[in-house]
Picture 1 (cartoon, rainbow over the protein chains, first blue to last red):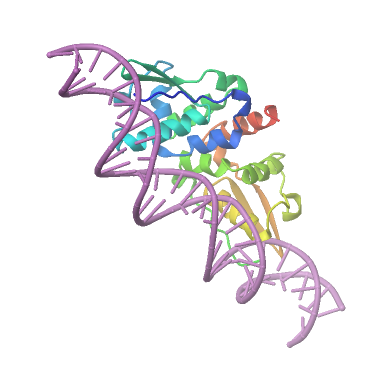
Picture 2: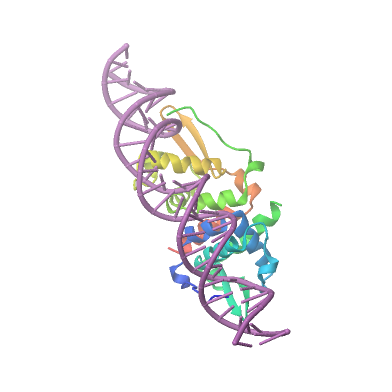
Length: 103
Length: 103
DNA sequence: GTTGATATTCGACGAACATCGACCATTGAA
DNA sequence: TTCAATGGTCGATGTTCGTCGAATATCAAC
């Protein structure tokens, strides 16, 4: 993969930014996959869009402080950023619960 | 005001739609004002944008099932839609709490 | 009626976004 | 040292979004 791991400081992350990032069906689907707390690879995420498009969504989630990307070799392990819960306690949980009960 | 009351069925409201609606600073500010559970008038909302712009944001919130508009005379009373909490339990509360603790 | 207050709609604009295909960068292995 | 695999970046394109001012609709009060 190309370099890069631009993760913002949690203090710089705003609530509208986070909600906006979660307010897209594909990105929400990504977060749902990550909700088990484990690291996941590209293969676990939706193939409903082009790879480049998914990259874009990942970038959005990363820049909103929602996910953490850890490159390893040619792979890229993605997980939820736990610090997000320090900044906005209970928020992600509430969103995931809402997502689960609305299915 | 022009006749209007396009409130969607709660069942048709999607989570991304709600999150997207809340993912804007001005709309979030509106929801914060409404968080006391009471009805509010235009005058209570931010004057930082043009009236027409605020109308637009109100429409977005209405169509996302977040707020309820009740015209009365020339006024327009706006409040949070309580059914939203039936559809996505705890969501709005979590967002408002996150908003409060991040200030 | 006419006027004034209040809110929505309309038409327009630039900015931001989602999407794609094509290309580039990094790495591990043949 | 090539090569394939993985994933990120770039440029283009069409769409949506936030914003405004102006026009319109509604109602109250005179």
